Image 1 (tube, rainbow, N blue to C red):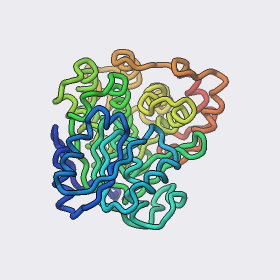
Image 2 (image 1 turned 45 degrees about the vertical axis):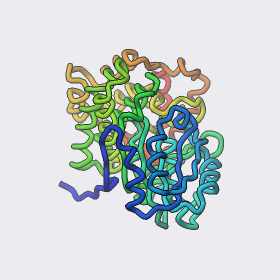
Image 3 (image 1 turned 135 degrees about the vertical axis):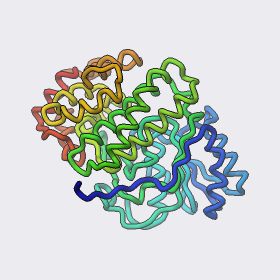
Length: 373
């Protein structure tokens, strides 16, 4: 066994209704002025209310940023930092974009280093404010990853990867996910499954802990994804999905993701396809491309995710329509003329492609997009 390191969020609370404890957690940390990062829909649906009520009950002043959008641009991060200057703790209740922004705000509000110097791996030099994250989707795993993804320019996605982005506490509260539309539940669930698969087959930093977490994540996600799509108010299944997403996040935070994500990012940047759906649209084709190098590992994962048997790629092809997801790029507005642009952008994701179990060229990316069209 080769040596390895493993980092994750130091405290995870998995319990329906647990966001009502956020105020106590902040009071224990001596917080007086809390920055709260979310989106307007979360506020309108009342999903943030238990957290906000508990924070107020703890005697803390609260400043709210609620204009978070998918694929958040740099300008939004800078605006959030300006609005939350002077806060001594950061909380986020929201989807992956809100959590990603909150992680950066916690770092940027604690020091003088500009965001432009943070892009890449281990470029953050300072500390951060106390940080508590509660996801409202079972997909990104952002509550346990040292990663924030930001849109720079018109469509380019850039990542900040640093252990300073790991929060103090991650709260998995299934009640936050009960109002999700079926399409969001389905797409984010597949996203979490992709995290587990790519961690398990990552060419760099794959290790026994990430493997164990990836396997258990796939077991939980595979057993519950159709249930939460068909019976959306099943709290137990929702809690299992959140835990599965969290475990997959722990896995890929240490054994990083690869070509599925590299090919998915341009779809989000150019066509505003939700990230989970972007992954789903190219997943079978990438699995087939990787099979010459990863077939044995895929064979280990297939019966865990799909106990009925069968090939991993084919099982995902069959799963997508059952849970109501599009299966072709053409269904989200992509045409043949767009494919060279997408392939060029995918090849810029060198941070991800280096982890793929099989080396991937521009021609390979173009062929994968063509097969997915």
